[in-house]
Image 1 (cartoon, rainbow, N blue to C red):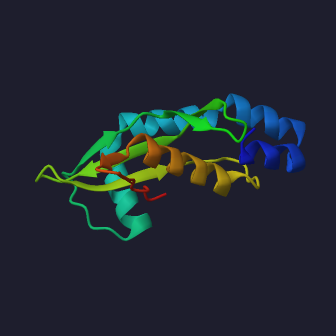
Image 2 (cartoon, rainbow, N blue to C red):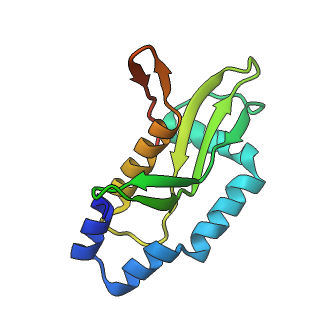
Length: 139
């Protein structure tokens, strides 16, 4: 059981629990829009995060399925709405981003984003000597 599951069990209605487990058409539509129109993400990221990426920067999507390590040692599949990198003309990765879109407020959003961002950092870490180097994405 993950931290998010503990919170859901304490605070969520049955409808919220079912919706979180199954995803929603709203999530699917958001994922489709970001994947079909990646160029529109550049101005959104510039506005939200105060960046100045050029319009010709490339959006490279990461995997949206991740396996979260649970407190009891199991792996639980989670699907993010949109995880991507922005790469400028030089070919250098300028930033990693995670965007989640939710139609209804609930108390688990912040914890879910933290879990997703942490798992993405762990999935993409680099081992140098006896050190693990991880970079958290902007979210």
